[in-house]
Length: 612
Ligand code: M6R
Image 1: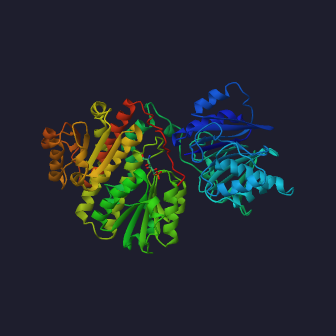
Image 2: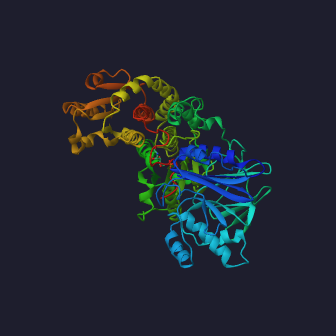
Image 3: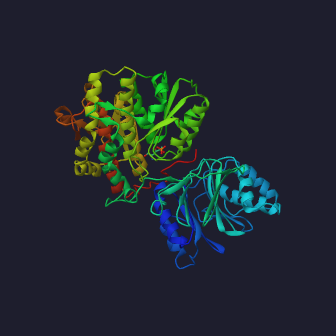
């Protein structure tokens, strides 16, 4: 999704902006631009990557202590130089960069056209720039700040914006509704960004803008207001994010780094929550909501993409160990279908970024209907943790690769802990199982390390099938969502068509696809469905399909049936999702690299989907 950076201070803005845009590249984008302000405003923008923008700027004038930069992920109008941000109003009074979608842009545009405005781009952002200017020029008593405020009251939709005005070249205005904006507080300088990654190398002190708030910022002052003009006291918080953790650390891609970080990410997720010594699992973030959770008649898990898959794993675990009925819904469906929600329902919203627009809207709906809403989120201080009644951070560290890997396992780790903690609290998990499970959970980081040691073998298998056009992923029970996740990982980064299915469903349709060109990845570890999945493998082999099986160490039966086996350490059934997904992540990664795909920023995708 689009990214914003901005700077106002005593340093040269250009290097700060370009570097900041590079830090935001992981979000996914198709054009980039900057505006530099030095008495006058100069804008440079073009289709393509930040490096294309740098080449385009070349030796042109880059002087200025104030500026803004943007990476655009096209929503209104194709990716091209004209639609790239910043956008300048018709008479040059305002320069704007914008994340989000202005839903009533068409009505506003028609009104502006009636009033003599013409447009260069197809974007909703240019409409906003012109609307601010129109309001400003119409009435002499309207100041720059008032014009921005009044324009925003007319906007329906989502925005995170930075605005510069020709009349006051020592000021930037930032505003937010539904699209995140963070302001870094330095010494006589301020930094702006759509998430904290471009800011941390400059300062750890930040102000998170809330919805309907705007900041009027000069080098040495910041005034925070609502768009209704009520002055507010800014709250400066310290962020705990260091620059090393957002760099590649010697790996070729962020995705590979993040796959290999999983043993530590899971340890961090368990830290202070699972204690083998005290024989206890406790999620402090749920404490306040515990009476509600313990009395919940039903849980509804909402999320999108990989987070939705983690939710499906959670459904199996919560029902098995806590004995709570669970439903799992795509946030985008939930929010639009007038769901029946009762006050004794608990809604669990899962999100890596904490900014996914559909998940946020679904949370707001669930709250309006009286449910208790819990968040499971990776990005500290993002919108979802601030919108929910209680929650658990996953502590996986920054995930930069668009394809979610360590965030998924950390989400599943939280759901596993939650299932056991609630099983115990509600008296549904007996002491023996509880203690066995604490032991099992504690072994996950070491088991993942062992699986990662098979990296080269997995790469060899991957290379054999890099030219396949289709893949099928099969799993049963709690491993069915892992099959879905494996298929999603492959399709999003390698562009190979892949489908995940519950293995028993194969004979109701997908079996028709199987021939000697169809690789079928079967998650076939030793659990209560083992015999059944062995039969499924035989069915695939009988139709000459190629079987890549994920098996429990020492399995000799499947070794003789399958074309390839990847072994994972013998384990407790409940932690199987955390282990079996690892080879699937690696296989997708190596296939995508072999096909020459841009693994960290796959085409058309964005890391944080802040539009619906
Ligand atoms: O930040 P979120 O977890 O809310 O994001 C949800 C999905 O957009 C995300 O999981 C997406 O499916 C990933 N690209 C999957 O790898």
